[in-house]
Image (tube, rainbow, N blue to C red; front, side, top):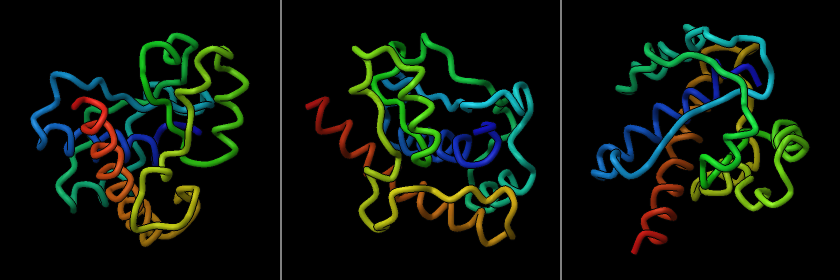
Length: 149
C-alpha cells in the first residue's frame, strides 16, 4: 500500500537471495506502493529493526508509488494481498496482466495467499512477515532460476 512495510521487506530479502545466488547483475528488483502515503520515506522503523535482526539492511530504501512503466519494466509485479493486486490489475495495461500475481504464490511453507499488513500490530507481526517473505523469496528465486536454464 504505502511501500514502507511488506514490499520493502520483500525487496530487501529477495535482493539478498539474488545476491547470494550471484544473479544481482541479471535481476532488477524494486518495491512500490499502490498508494502515495509515504513517497520518499524510509521503511517503517519496526520493519527495519526486524529486518536488521535477520541481516537485511533497508536503510537506503525509499517509498515510491507504482507507475504504468513498471508493468513493462519488470517481468513480475507481485502484490502482498488481493486488495493491492486488484489495484494493480486496474492500473496495468491488459497486454501486461500476465506479469501480475501474489507474492505468496511462490511460498512453499506457508498456505496463506496474502502477506498480512503488520503496520497496526505488534512486533511479532513484522517477524511473521519476514518468515513469509523469506519463504516466498526462496520460491521466486527457484522459479526464476528454472526459467533461466
